[in-house]
Image (cartoon, rainbow, N blue to C red):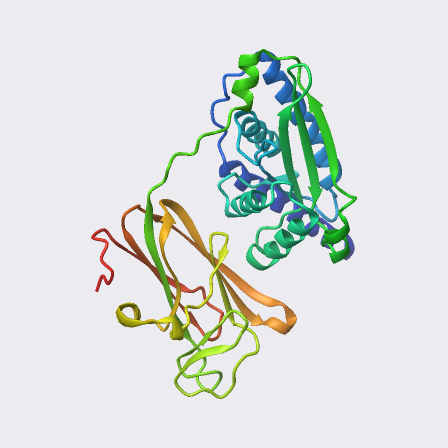
Length: 371
């Protein structure tokens, strides 16, 4: 009887978790109006997505190990790695189709995990096994709270006799990618090819046309922090650490220096490094001093006047016990307006138990020091 009760509880929890995750995924992205393609091309996209959805369920779903499959679907690009109309539409409808299945948790196109995948594909359009392994390792560090079990990528090109050729790749991510696979290539990737009906020249041009991305205004972003370290351990107020863990500056009395950084930060897809004290010169040194004083901070992570207007995120990883791979992650979304100075401040206590205090200040007057 006890075993039956425990099993019922576990099954109920899994089903509830699946419902919650699926509900969240359905809110992530609302399909837009379909592109005005011909009926032949619409049917081709629909049949393609039905096949890929079935293959995704067959490859990724496991009732006991993965009752809910975390899945990423990238836009299907042309051979040059550019976003095209039909590739955008295929991915959009595929996400919507997968969202209808309770066994899938589909990440929207604008989700930080999807944006991370997009950055990886931009850097390596063929997305080699080594790039996949790097992406998987970054997922574990940066997006531990957002499991990814399966990734769908694709490429669209012009085939023979005015047909469109689509290659879809279903890439398992539920097992670690080892070093040998990253060097010699993976054998567990499911690849399927599809060929459209013959199209007119106008239809081909429209489907394969590159999506024009408008020029975006840019603004300045400065990220600073106050690291409140435990008194009597490491230092009284904080220790500034370089990326490799070497101490760059200690504030107060220190009794022990950690071998690894206690904190790691990312701005979108870029891992941030502490700005070294030795690099401060002249007026910049005075400006940084004033910024730190104004916020009551002790560390500068970023100073970039080339940040695109729009939504961005900062991710903070706190190592509670690096030797045991124990850490917490937090994120903060914010929006940058072009032509303005933007200051983001966060503080972290030494116990690492609470969520960081995050403060965001916008200076419309675009002053170097808004204090």
